[in-house]
Image (tube, rainbow, N blue to C red):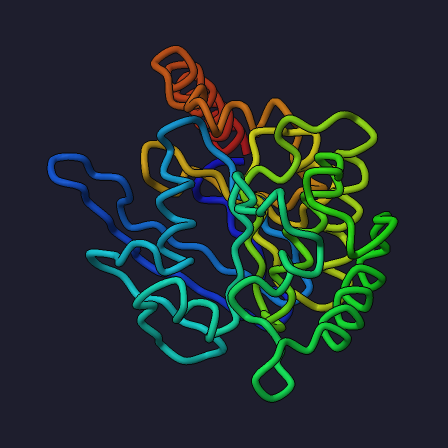
Length: 278
């Protein structure tokens, strides 16, 4: 498959970016990039370092404003002025650093900056109940919501960060390298969480370098290369070799191009001989 591969539409498109362009001085970070995210679907966004993945995610999260292009959310064109605006729309982002406070417990981290109040005081009971509800919805293995974040494993921390993204009831959740630096068992737990997000009807954007993770959970795979759309695949129809070729541009080198031309010429000659003999 190549960049011309057409992936048929599925369910409702929640978030759509079309023709997104972003420049930083002399550096063209994104050029005419497009991506659709559907409800109940995991879209993997992959590419080599410098491909534009982080810039695109920050455009979707409202951190960067695109120089050109359109963003559509729930069928209406929007402008995402900042992270707060993205959150109000229903776009949540879990960045790689997780941004958790080690000295605070799980409840405090889940509701940091969005605390529930009963009059002038914090409603600790309501927040604790909601914390347990969120963690149970993800089948999370956390012994207590009052345990400090510093006492949790890497996988459990990732769980808390994902659960925090659900507090505002988003429609799209973006996960930036959620399994980076995790062991095999913890990675499996996080991938299970990602699949549960899909099962709840959320659109999920998964940014990762791990091809095994991509093929394990993704429905569609969007490849960026040098700030442009390079390819788009159905996960069940693509091999690891196809993905690596799209990411590295191996299908664009001179040797491959020459072989493709030779093959096309041979096919054309064969068709011509077949036509003349009839």
